[in-house]
Length: 374
Image 1 (cartoon, rainbow, N blue to C red):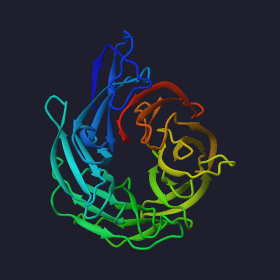
Image 2: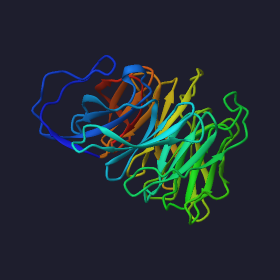
Image 3: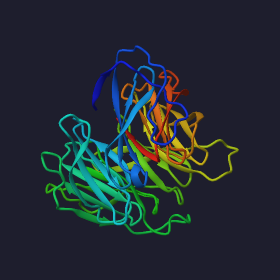
Image 4: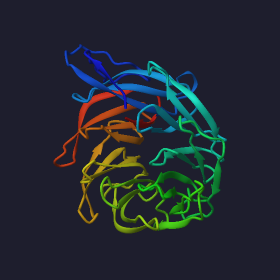
């Protein structure tokens, strides 16, 4: 995460695509955080963007492209902030590694390799940052690459093809949608929307994947998409794209298996229109869980009990269309939403006592934002 000292803040309402913001300057001395944005923008706009974010007011400003890349739909930022990895949702798919140039104004590409599949949609890096994994939605496969010390990928991939199907029309075949390394680095979890399963792969001493087992079998037609781990406890939370639900589960760190605790809807009881869930995040204290609805165009807010039970607290309109991804600010005071179809990033303030969201009025126009990373 990079920061600069800034003095002038500019506004951000109702801007056109890829617009920088302009309003009356305010004399606020505060370090601006850097927000990375992956996009599905096309033509001259395609690539990875960086935006300045005022952590005091929640304002976004000074949008600029830092890398030209085709469909960088998901990003991973290294712990030291010096390297960026992107999954590129093309056919065939690919994964890229970048590092910042000397003045941190642009990303220089270190390597780009095949994702051994089509439609790469997610990239994850191991806790020690020596392995990279990617999920391919279209081909229903995953891949793992070793990383060199400087962060580039080593051209020694291991690809794994999933198989199976489910009852939903979008489950005619496997669709790997997320890969996450376990918090102890012993396993790789692959979330497959097409087969209603989360698979767990042991990581061998030679940094290769062993034989998969089912970490969690979801209900038929759930369509699991993403997962997020509890910040301090052995719990995990899964968002189901097709059934518009979230699931909490315990994690057995020794064998990589999940045990279901609770399952709740992300929608109001009277909502009957189409919906597809997308992203999921948890507060740093582990008390509140957030899930995005594409169609209903909202963020569902839950409380998380000590045992992992979920209670729906509220559902907040995202002031846009198709919230594919969102992020909590590092201090947890704000929640930012990437609305893909309305071409905007929206900022909510988070009430840390209740977990509820309040729209700040701050937004930034950007073409097809689909991933936000601080």
